[in-house]
Image 1 (cartoon, rainbow, N blue to C red):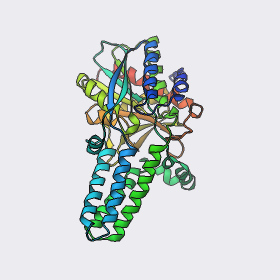
Image 2: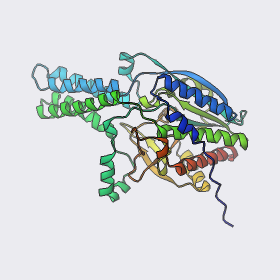
Image 3: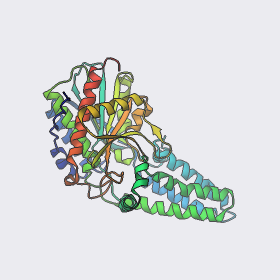
Image 4: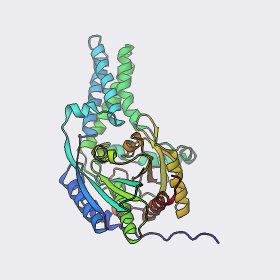
Amino acid sequence: MPQAKPKPPVVPFDVIEHLAAIDRTPGSPGEAEAAAWFAERLAAAGCEVTIDDAQFYDGYARPLAKMTAAAALGGLLAQTNRGRRVGGLLAGLAALGIADDASNGPRFFRKLTGSPIPTQNVVAIAGDREAERTLVLLGHHDAAPTGKIFDDTLQSALGERFPGVLERIDTSIPLWWLVLSGPVAAAIGAKRRNRKLASFGTVVSGIATAAFVDVARSPTVPGANDNLTALAVEVGIAERLAAKPIPGLRVMIVSCGAEEVVQGGIYSFAERHFPLLDRDKTWVLTLETLGSPNLILLEGEGTVVMEDYTHRPFRDLIARCADRSGAQLRRGMRARNSTDAVIPSRAGYPTATIASMNRYKALSNYHMMSDTPEKIVQKTVAEALLVVEEVAKELASNPWL
């Protein structure tokens, strides 16, 4: 007889509704309020919960606007004989700084020009507290600013006009390459005494500066899909583990602050907790923007250079668990934006990210004021919770892992 599909789980969507009403700008009192409320909700679900102090450096819009403005100035200087060398150096340094910042490098510019800002990471323990194996569920409770750059009209129009082309593209558009093209063009134009190329770099860098300034001045979105859907799944799995424990697996439920600055609180989490987590007995599953129509499994991410996540067998395991749960999970997708998953992956932990997308292969209402609770596709969130529970069961029971 065919195996019956698991019943759809009860997802605590009130988590999304409550937190979406709070302004959760990174580093704000609202973000701290959201962390405290989420911690209380996890404690009510039977978890051992702590709120860790964390810090981040302001980003991404403000420091990047300064660097693209410097590149635009460099392009202007490169069009004069006297200023060519200085302009080329300025544009080249800006290009290196942007690549460093966007790709989670040392971030010299942020640290040189800014001061640490406090945030909070919520860390809860559920499941078998004494188990040797640990599944880390990684989400974030802050929300992003909006901006004109996030208007999805063009991508939707291209999807309608060229559906076959879009279907063949499983890696998102490298928008950060467009940002980098300005400073790079200005630097090369200066080196080769090519004023047209330097002018192109100036124009592109100027447009990028305007876009970043617009983001820096824009309001913070409700962030229901990105990323309160992850928090609803985390509370849901905590409640299900309390009702029906899974022996042999400790589940660490984490929500980092300041993720929307292109990774913030995750660095403090890594510094505090990675030394205590055995890479041979720990798996990290990032939950990111789960309320679009179609559930996906990211194979990797990279704003500048694509990085597949560490340990493909873990992604294979998740795909098998999705099949067993009856969830429709599309594989093969790679993102040109970044998530907190890149930090544990670089540290050598088996890492994966479950996300979702719409028919245009975009995150629904991404960084838009329309990212509200009523726009969430609840079925997708419920499927994500089913997959997470099946992954936990597999990690707890499979002796070969």
